Image (tube, rainbow, N blue to C red; front, side, top):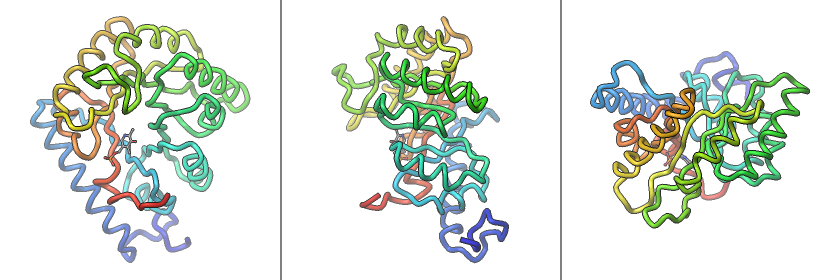
Length: 250
Ligand SMILES: *Cc1c(COP(=O)(O)O)cnc(C)c1O
């Protein structure tokens, strides 16, 4: 532990840190290139490194390399890592499907939930975050409404139907403990991502018309970050292209 970067010793002797640094630089270069092609100039989207299945030590290495935002998709794993890394000034994003009974736990460490997709979850998060605000003075939780972009209207990869966005938005906006940050989506499997992200941009525009502060678009993973940036992503969620393939057992 004492030799890990982030504990003050730099990363020069740690091969895993060198590997992560190389992959991170390559992804940052792709992001800058895509933003330039999209005519977005210096307004780069935020990079959330999705660290699920990878050990807390890797997050410590990433923090030493300048990463500030990390994403996780399972509460048990995220809670344990956040506790272990409490000495770091990291912002934790919850990006996976979330059961209402986990809202209390998530409210302890997450600054944002990207997978808000049903009214019961809004209510559970609102209640849990409010009690943390009262007890610890934590900030309101940023909520992204996850939208399903499946052509058949299905929800195989999670998310609310686009027609449910207005009601969810209203419910989030009504809570003092929740901040309506925007929309989130995962591109459908086996289909080109561009039409999906274009559709998401339209959903975002309609949301922003009613809620000017809710302009966040959480979209873009390792495979499709260029397409997401082209259609206005403000938050990218990148896992495997930075960390390598996920270990078979978490
Ligand atoms: C795992 C995951 C990511 C990162 O995916 P990669 O393909 O590894 O970049 C992004 N978003 C969500 C919701 C995820 O579960």
